[in-house]
Image 1: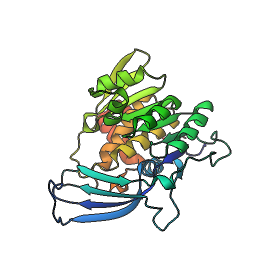
Image 2: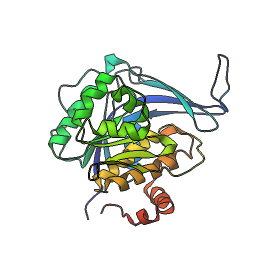
Image 3: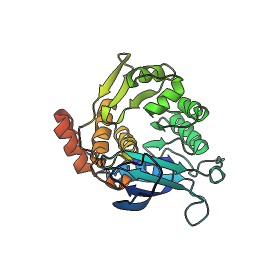
Image 4: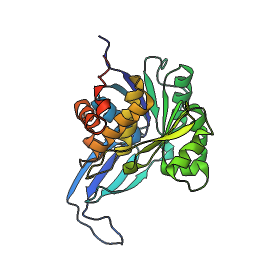
Length: 292
């Protein structure tokens, strides 16, 4: 039997301090946390961890700096009792110089490559090489300067953008469905726009229409890293040759399960949990088997 799919994740690596409060602060003052955890995280790192829990063989390419905590690779996060969060990341540009070459002889060993927007030079190299190799080159398009997004979008074969990122690119306020259609008109890539609990909109090039995948309804404890888990699971789904809508359902199920647990990416689910959520929410999807 063939082994697990191989995935490369490229981008952010941080040391996160996550503090749990009853409510997010609305004014200055001193606030006592009810829980806390410090973990290695970041968009690409959290996506890699999520993909590994879902059964993938994952490699991470990230800029970590050269001091004890990764040259100021820091993020502070506050999470309230409803699972909502405030994230304050800091990425020291001095530790993220554009690389000249990929760290690997070739990317053909990977079934898919996922990149985020936090290390644009590395992301551009990985996307271009992966797409040239005919493998899924997936961009996690999140909030970033417009020039970074415009640099990376043409290189991806699959773009999954947050609502804020889609609006940055489109240049005006749009609902997620309209933003998805607008983004799809600017590229030949697969395009989806995520809306958290509202679900995901994706452009079906076969029909020319935007379709919707609803998110399973859960009582969120912590939404931190839900998007990263979504992207990691989507990459696994594509690498396993799931149809796009099925891969989005797989990702939605994994992200919903993550929201049930405090601790950011520590709440990422395993394969069995994710399949059970899919079977409960989309009964016909429960027939997907793990890639042999």
